[in-house]
Length: 325
Image (cartoon, rainbow, N blue to C red; front, side, top):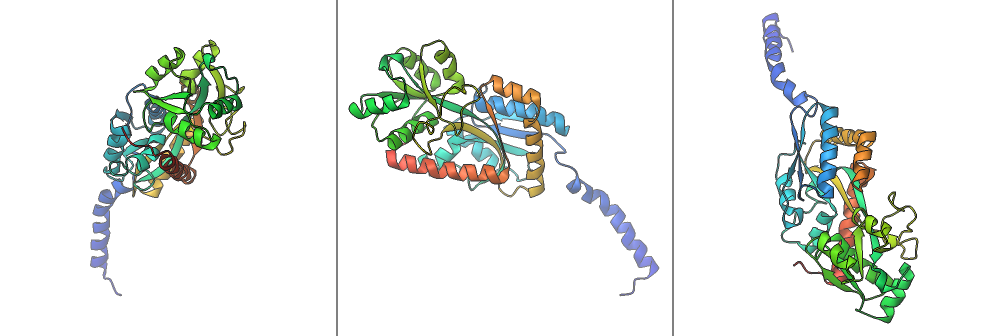
């Protein structure tokens, strides 16, 4: 096709004027502040992890990462806020184990984290510890199982509420060990631990950060940790799996998620920033001080973890016939 000189100059001029219009779409991400929405109150483990991470992400990227707390409805309010936000990477969700539980516990009122988000990176986890009040008279997991078999529905276990990780940890343990224990739900971990220390309830799957001071003071007996490996905070404690319940693993984990449809290059940029932050000594120290263990996993591994947890808790909820409060 023949293009005369005048026409060529017109095309070049048009391209020159169009260049500034196209430039913003090609700017490096992020080019403005990023919001991380958390479904739990300020001071919670998820909130603390988000704030430590946000500080480092902001320093590394040159843009603010702002944490916004939207607690309520077992973090569904926060999840819905992000799921309906533009898929541009500027609104992110700190997903947790609660979201994988909600998919089965609240099927009509929850956001499906495995379907409505793109996994970016796992951030960390807080392992649980199976603890017993000394008055129960058990020193090991096997002794607890033997006692529970001898006295069905007599041994109690506290939780921070119906459908929470400590509750379902107890249900999973009971199923795998072939025992029947009595669940006593509380409105939060604090009142549950208070009654456990007083001997009003016998056992609990408690967050390590909450339980360890009482264990070291001799007020509670630690039987096992519940993570996939021994906890950095109590390496002397064997895992439940080590002690015979193969496949038993529960921990309160959290990770960064973006709305479905977020461009892959934006997800990759975020993953790179998160992993760099996890390698930072100050970030590691700050999270460790709060009882949080770092877990490094990219979109593929984190997405697989979400699906595995969603499937696992669906089975537990069905087996135990758990209903929302």
